[in-house]
Image 1 (cartoon, rainbow, N blue to C red):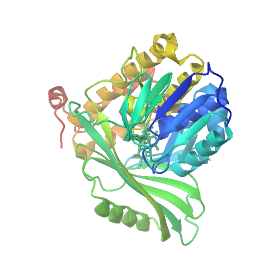
Image 2: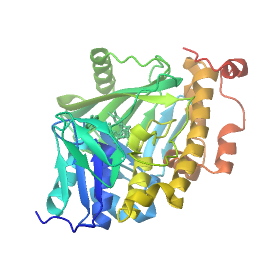
Image 3: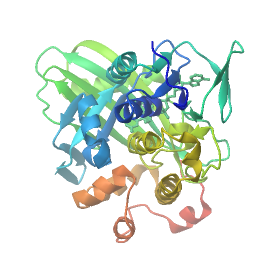
Image 4: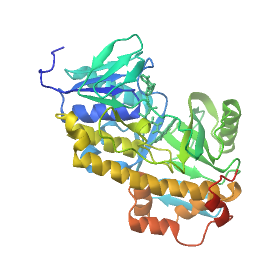
Length: 390
Ligand SMILES: Cc1cc2nc3c(=O)[nH]c(=O)nc-3n(C[C@H](O)[C@H](O)[C@H](O)COP(=O)(O)OP(=O)(O)OC[C@H]3O[C@@H](n4cnc5c(N)ncnc54)[C@H](O)[C@@H]3O)c2cc1C
């Protein structure tokens, strides 16, 4: 492997999840000879996820790159509530962990100065180096800490809990587009819906999701429940090819990403670059990846750069609004009627929904999302106390 020229700055990506994968791809696209080292504790990068996103989450400059890594895409999707069903004309797409991992591995293998080290437990992270479990020290010009979520004991939050099964069905399942919220199911433990993504005529992902005030997720009960819902819809599995589950925070206190003066740059979930009201982080991870790619030649200057400061301020503002919405949802609306909030949301014009999901709402969008008749079961007194209604 040719070594980088002496002045090529080295970027160290700590944690091989979504954020680091997107940074690696974006940086190597901009600078194929960049000096990049990605460190992951597990045996392979990527984890076990199906990462979905809206077409509108993708910045223009990264559209070609994201198109090239997308595994499945659809021009529209459905939502269903007890009193509203709608076809949403917004592009939707997914990438699985395996797919993204294979792409990043191939891209790094083809690049002269990019490398992945797996089974590599990083013990400490500093602005210009990291120390591995065995004591080895690795130096860098920019260290990006993307080791995933840190639990914040101070934060008051609700949770998005989900358990999904990827099914190979006995016969064609007949689903032609995603259903990202089917809330016609029984409402248990908060706002509950089914999420269905068709990957092929006989392959689909079915996820049971609840927005709850409690983080518990008992996997065997949830597996039984999602298989039961699948059977009710006629999805008879010949095989359950994969499972995934998660409990994502939906905070209503605390803040968004911090404006850092120096490294290590905390990115991805570790840096609170996620959407508090959806639990998703794909749009934010893309914006951070784009930023780092712009600064890869002079990474030390990143923290003083206007685009870094502008990005963080904008993410903070968006996070404040989303956290306020979470507060209203979890402290103001009774669990049994929370579905009405989402039913109302899906009455909005598509461009408002697109900006909401991308974490880029305007002042007008905020007003549209807040004004009007309060949701059924809404209690101002309860929302003011800020205590979750379980
Ligand atoms: C099952 C699931 C599905 C999701 N689906 C979506 C979705 O559809 N769309 C969306 O936008 N968001 C989704 N999310 C939310 C969020 O986007 C993901 O959690 C995303 O993976 C977060 O990216 P990240 O890079 O910040 O952290 P992670 O992807 O969690 O990556 C962190 C990595 O750091 C590694 N690591 C941790 N500690 C160390 C250490 N000491 N040394 C070395 N490595 C370390 C971990 O092993 C891991 O690989 C989902 C989350 C889950 C759990």
